[in-house]
Length: 134
Image 1 (cartoon, rainbow, N blue to C red):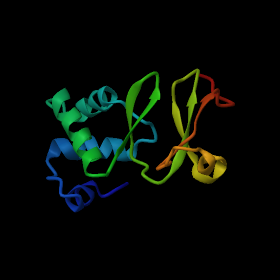
Image 2: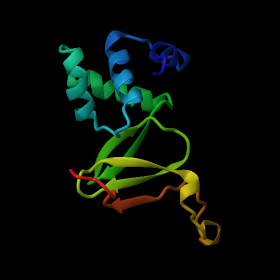
Image 3: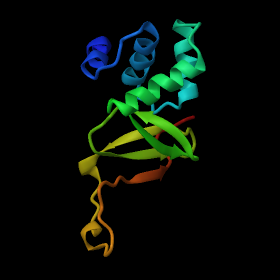
């Protein structure tokens, strides 16, 4: 479990109880939640938290470089706490997003794209995870 308060403070974020609750969920989950999914989960332990507080906190964490946003499921923004380069696999049946290690996928040819300066890339694969029953 991540020391959320220390992490927030090191990024210059005031560690209010609401922010800690949002960050705790996002950094401790293996999923790639949407803002509404974060709100639904955090409300269980912090019933007075507003949707606006969740959205503002997530956006602040992105601004401070603690989270990344990704558009991986049908145009919906999800939040990803894994900042190291990696790829993604989206299960067609469940919608679950899996992190794929960077070295597991080899991409070639980005240097030969004329007229483009590639700053960053990732591969998003879609299909079915074997053994997935849902």
